Image 1 (cartoon, one colour):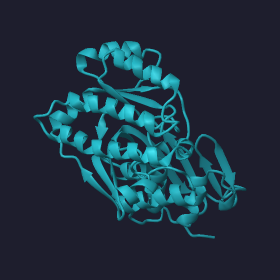
Image 2 (cartoon, helix red, strand yellow):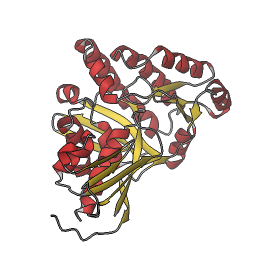
Image 3 (cartoon, helix red, strand yellow):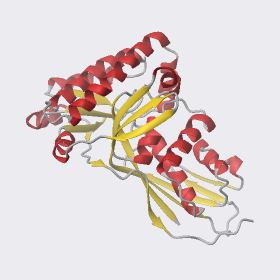
Length: 333
């Protein structure tokens, strides 16, 4: 039996520039971190006592005798990709799916990691990220960028650069005190809305490409500014929050589905209560709102958001991990 634990990610700057259609031509970069909310994938070979040969439990349970019959596209394609058979897979998570935290990509990375471990094969972080991107973007034909899979595999607070040759992951060198202060100044709330990131990306793709690309180029430039704020101890950390507000306004221009009237109203309430800036996590349309709030203003923001679920969190550095490993003797039929 194998159990993997894979973190969710929080993206601050550069979202959208990780789309292959954009960065191959223009370059791209994102500033993101993983945090201490995880998905867990439990995998073993299914004993041969049943009518079915594989049992898969996520938001529903599937029992099938042929891999081709699996309804969940990521599980079906991952099993075909790695030639997996007679599998029992269980998925659970600390936070809901379809909520803007890269949950589907964390699942894809964690599942591939578990499958490799079950085969007794080591897969490094780059291999897991690359294969998760291939699984979701090519095999499952889901629209979206590359940052989620990379963040889930590598973990930590990183700048991820994208270009014609692919990507590179550069850990951000921030003093522990400054990183702790940033963590303490961020407040996360669940809006209750859920949607598929790939659906939002498809809607946004129908917008005016030239205008969207211009906005993305501006957002790409802000990654440098945000990184400088974090690594330079002499800079006022509150500028990070103010830059988030600038990105919010820019992103409102970049896609029709980035925000809704309801989300806009929540954001304005948070700002009026004292937040310096904020971020809707994911491709838009709902999920989690993160605000940058100075400590003395946090009670007021919490009161303004009292109808939403408040989620405390801490940055993490581990990326995807195998947390339980019991090898099995398995002979294919």
